[in-house]
Amino acid sequence: RLFDEMSTCSSKRARGASDGVDRLSSLPNELLHRVMSFLPMPEVVRTSLLSPRWRYLWVSTPYIRIDHQDFMDDSKFKNFGNRLLILRDGATSLDEARISAHNVVRGTSWCEWIRHAIMHKVRLLHVSAYAPLDSTAMFPSQHLKIVRLQFNLLEHGFFRQLNCVCSVLEHLELEGCGLSEVNEISSRSLKVLYIIRCLIVKGLVICASNLTHLSIVDPRCRSGAIVTRDLPSLVTALVSLRSDNFHYKENTILGHGLLDGLSHATTLQLHAPLPELTLERGLRTCPVFSSLTSLVLGDWCMAADFYPLRRILHRSPKPKELSFKLEMVPTQNHL
Image (tube, rainbow, N blue to C red; front, side, top):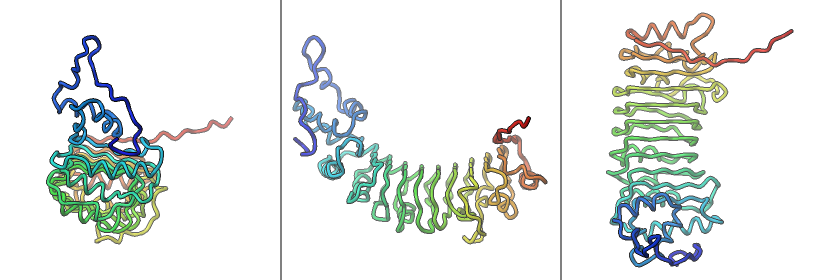
């Protein structure tokens, strides 16, 4: 057995249906690794028992998944993850590394696992876990292009390292994450950024000069906590706010606002309920949307005096398309 935590499985070889020829094992490693990518990781390791041809095939697979649901308890999950990364062939680059645990697993070396994957030249990193990540999780990489983080607590210089040492990072998704300090996303290589239902405790500045797409969806933070600036490459932007996720205070970050960095976008979507003070206040100081050709607005611009609508149209000299996406509020008939 490769891992004490794994149950013994049959050692029968994979054979053809009628002639007894092991056709599967005759396939090249690249195809077998692709087949392995659809299996739970414990099953991938168990393939080493099929035959001598398969004994060390799993150690060079370019796909790894460490999923808490594949294990009976936390200790087996942690031990498997630790041994998997140690025994894996370090000479083979990783295409994908996915780590998932939807329960709080104490004592797990999350940062060490992530750093190990980055050292193995991972290109796509997906971490979905209620786990704290700090600057020790990041390692210099010229291969990491896509990072997806779900439900992580990002603290202690995590973004500072991400901005500096991941020189080819192009795609960053944050969903349901907690940002515990004033953070700045300023990666020069970043092109796509999604921030979805994240808790932003103090503040977030987005100033990635090569960013082309930005989505900010239902953040939980005070008004003015999110600032955009210096986004000259921006093409599309979507901002969707829910008023019940905000505590209204004046913006205190750098004198900038949520809309300031969106002025170069050609396509802009701004969704929020009525009234929405964050967007309305942002319109008072935002620059001209000089490149804007397509504009989609939500309920927030339908104030009694239509000030938000009038203001944003005044600041958009050449729109070609204007659309509205309004929520239908059910009414009650009184007889």
